[in-house]
Amino acid sequence: MLCFKTPVIEDKKWVDECLKNVNSFNCEYTFGNAYIWHTAYSTKICRYKDFFICRWGKGDDILYSLPIGNGDFKEAVEKIIADAVSLGIKPRIYGVTENYKKLLDEYFPDKFSYEYDDSMNDYIYSVEKMASLRGKKYHSKRNHITNFKKNNPDWSFEAICKDNINDCIALHSKWINERSNDEEEDYSFEFEAVLTAFENYEALSFTGGLLRVGGEAIAYTLGERHSDRLFVTHFEKAPASVQGAYTIINQEFTKNCLMEYEYVNREEDLGLEGLRKAKQSYNPEIFLVKCTAEYNG
Image (cartoon, rainbow, N blue to C red; front, top):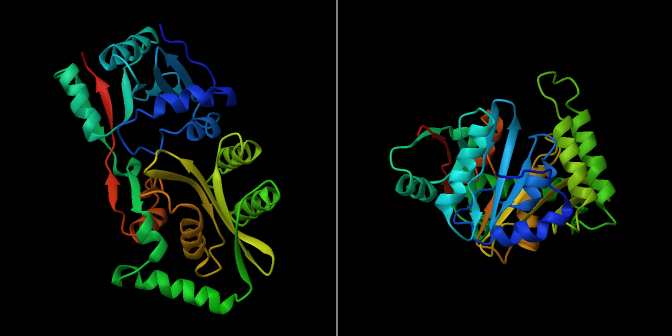
């Protein structure tokens, strides 16, 4: 029987130990991701032997993560299947990349079917390319930065720390207020995740950057380490009215904070057309295809 619980900060140590064994670049396989979004996605976590297992959702709409850790992978998946059956739902595992799909098919031949959704795939970029923006592909990005610096000669960048966290929260709140007429969007869960991230910024080992113009905070970004090779960016906010703000916070953060990594995962586009165009415009090095595996045994 799997025992799921709401994640607490004290879980970070054992979860991080399990996640050292992850064999994919999924954005969801960080403790911070599970922790800050646990209200929005009804996230529960479980420690089964030396595996970390995540469960999202309520009622009939529940998804599981792959079991990540050390030990008998097949047995851990069987425990997931049994947990779903005990709840009277179809066992479904989210975020299955090609290498894990092969593993599921090896241990459970013809037992899983797979559903793909491009809006859930991850955009992963070369840190070196994001920092330099060299070449024809990034010509427009360099122009945006040039124009930003010309129009805002008193700009500055700084790492996020306890002294400027309140500036970031105020900035995010202002960003939401500017969208107050957008009745189709509910930003409350996102803002709760942001507050949780900043309230536990040091405990979660987050890294972030803040952009100022004339001393006023106008853009910020933050995320966390996934592995020695990969960083995951969770939030990036800037006013759309300030040309080049997103471009320069992205580049400055990469140059100043991420050069120890090979890649940066900037998560999914969620099927939002504007977000998709923005992510594609940076020419991802890897478009990480993920699917949902449904057990039909």
